Image 1 (cartoon, helix red, strand yellow):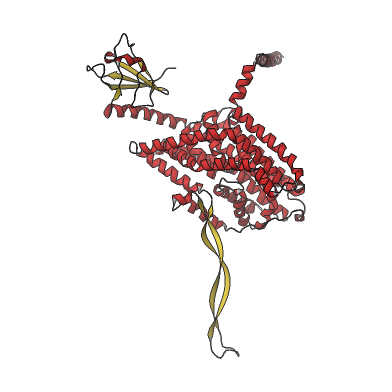
Image 2 (spheres, helix red, strand yellow):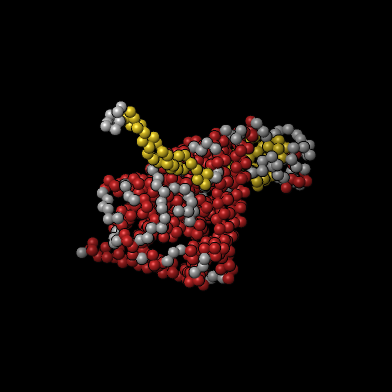
Length: 592
């Protein structure tokens, strides 16, 4: 009885503490709201101007698009109306190539081979894990909801789909990894095409009533043969492989590779400044992209029945992966609030929704991760370009779900072996899907062929692909970004080790090869600079210009980031107008 009373008293105490905590938080929130001033509101809008404008553009574009649908605009009028959105796509795509190459080269050059190897393994494990989870979610959702119930007659086929051999598609993937011409890789990628040729076969003919002697007869037949061809578009996979290899080589070259590292660093910084300018135009472009697509889309009545259920199934699957799986994965690994991380990505996600291209969104994703979420540039420059090329969670989920949906429409029962085959091929096909609009439709041919489903039935779902493509692109961008955050968290030890090694190597290099030179007149002591090492700032002199002439100052301190460099003057006398040469260095942790 005493124990029961003690437990009751403890429970009451906990409940009271909980109530007190809730009351305190509510009072604090009420006080904060009451103390909000006009300047606070202006500051909030100023800090979040890009995000607010972008979200507003999506809302206004949706309303405008549905408002213009009753006017039945012609194809030419729709294209004219969507022209501002087309300009945004062109500007973003213009930056993809230099940003992809420069970011990967600088990112890999900043890492040693050991650190890049570990980071690469972590990234690949993350990509594989999330893709498999996405495929599993897609298969479970389509088997539970079963959107393919009904009659196939409800659909209308729109166009013919080109047949693709899975073996040829796999070989094209390998070919694109090793382009023979880097200039060509900037504009074209390899794709097997098919041609017909007539083959003549000689057949032996025995003696008959109509033939007095044995002989041969020529039979002609037509066969389809694979022919190596190209299609327009950046060969992102080949450029990724080359840039990663090139960056690692530059990093291992140390001093010899420094000019190239400086060049690509400067190029990357210039591209990011261009991105900052384009971001001001992005809301206007997104508005017209979305409005134009809504005006252009087919009759909404086609969204009913099986196609409507299919659309709902895909959306639910993508939401489960993007809203539940990825944030939970980020929380369990980093122990940080995923909502704060995702809030910093809002503009990149909205841009992905408008452009339906993860590659075109790449410049915005870089800026959001590095400036809003403060992810290490060495990680973003390595993880994001690779992720935009091979990590397609939304595409993998969509392809697995769509393949089983087409089987349901055709009243075909899928056994466990076929579902497993779909899982594997959907995972592999998503890796080969380029980060361009509607690439999933092309790679889905491979998935359907692997289990003997009719590839022409892809045309059944084209009517709603414009919407689903935007949603799965947003999921892809979110997956890449969360992957960068997770990889940075797991790689912080290697990154700190590299920072320490760089600091030690700088000190050692200056001790053995080149001393600091501080060129300054005695009267300019307070404004002294280090002209031959522009990265070190915050020079402090031990003694003022009046009390300690420059030639007699014996201690100089320079700070760089979190490191402090202490330099002692050489024990030789110099005239006031001559350079001071320092030879003794010590690196320590800077104090805030």
